[in-house]
Length: 320
Image: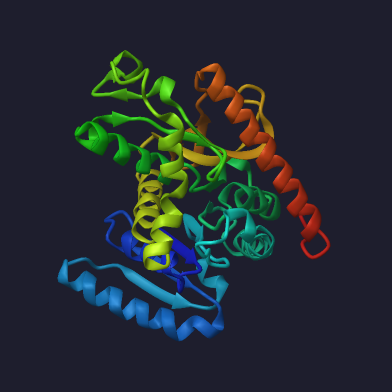
């Protein structure tokens, strides 16, 4: 299986590439970057191969600035964009990154027309919509990292708070990957028991937990300059699920057309059944009144933001 990573010279892009190289289901990886970063990704490829040799892993890693090399990729990951600094919101990145994502989505459509596009670039919900509209791909084949990483961070918080193994925590965050994320506490379970049946449910600080998850990325960026391992392994989860046709339910950004309480014409993080063809089904979830209200606020915010950004760049980008 062949996977291409656009923006492989960046910190997230290279971390994603190395995680994928360790997956037995991937046997070809193309590291794509601009010409000026070609030496850097050549060095990354050499370093990765040395590490993989120590683990007896053999995989073809091709550094390239020629986007024709992504041909026949099963998945193309778009990780290129302006990096986020601690003081920046994800939306501060929107206009410059929209131009970048739109350009690369068109190249994917040209050179890897049967591939699945996985967007990592922030703000990921808006960028997923930009990639969908720019590529002309059917919506099942354009997905974003979305709330998958947020949901993993939430599982960690629950596991630490209650001193329970992370595998026993079943919870998720939906909506925007940003300030309008929604914690589905009403459907959270621990060890197969609904959390609402636990004595801690009534006193649970939902707003405090949401703030922790919202700020998790900024906290890491403040400490070390960028998030790398969390996004990389989250992406690896997604890629492995697709290539192995695992039919797992993950919370990813996808284009909605009325499946979740009538929400349409917007890309948001929701539970999806994921397989070899990308999104096979959008899973409708029951929400409490407060959760639904927050989800609709997220939908309105992301749709308004997306429409504004498309208007700002449409003279430079020819949307399909």
